[in-house]
Image (cartoon, one colour):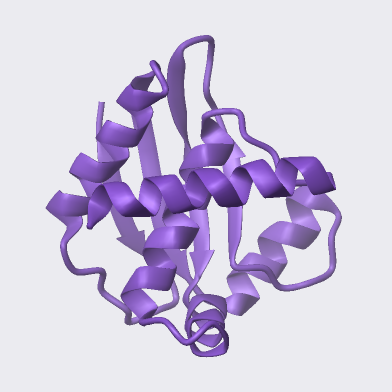
Length: 138
C-alpha cells in the first residue's frame, strides 16, 4: 500500500518525500504493524477548522487531525495538517518548519499505531515516542 502526499489550500511543498516514506515505514515496522494506505494532506487553518467542526464537534484550530481507518494489524488513515499551525509552532519552539512538520507527521502516525494523548500519562508516552521516532530519521 502507498503513503501519498497531497496539498489542499496551501502552496507548501514537502521536500524529501522518499526519505519520509521510508521513515514512516520503519516506524510502522518497528511497532510490528503492516502498512495500509496513508494519505498525508497539507492544508490550511480554515480547512482544519472545518474538519474539526464537522467531524469532531470542536471549534478551534489544531496542527493535525488524524482519521484512523486501521483494522487489526493494518495501519491506514488520513493525516490533515495545517501548515499555518506548523509554521507558528516551528517559530514558537525555535525549530525549522521541516522539522516541526516531521514531528506532526509522526504524531499522526503514532495515533494510527494506537498511541493516545488525551490524559497526562498518555501525553508523556506520546512525547517520548515522538522523540524516539525523530531520531530515526536523522
